[in-house]
Image (tube, rainbow, N blue to C red; front, side, top):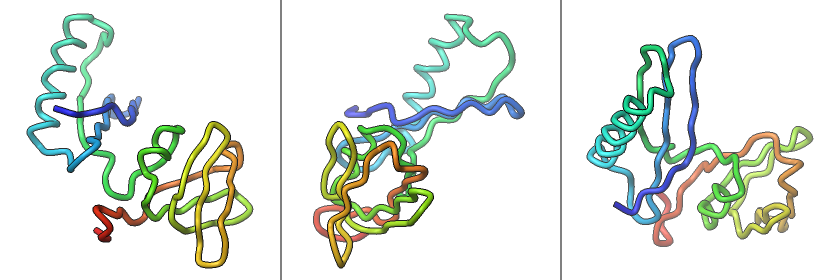
Length: 133
């Protein structure tokens, strides 16, 4: 399937487990979500890890996906991102990543931003094969 785990959320109030999946190439399809949902549901039910009724949702993180972990930034290289450091917001092309942070190119300069300085980050424009989506 070529799928990878992207993120996980659990809402205590609605008892909803949300699992986000992604693909290296191409978009996540409804069929992909169904397969993952069926597999995870079977495994969770068999393991009895969750001892109360819950709702399982499986989806793509979306085009304007939130970036939380270093691998999220790596997977988003080449896309337009918006980074909030608390002191400023930077919007530009994500040029690269390393173990310490990211490089975002704006019209005026390249910004080296340590992961520790990032409060919020998301993809705002996905670039696919050199074209904006």
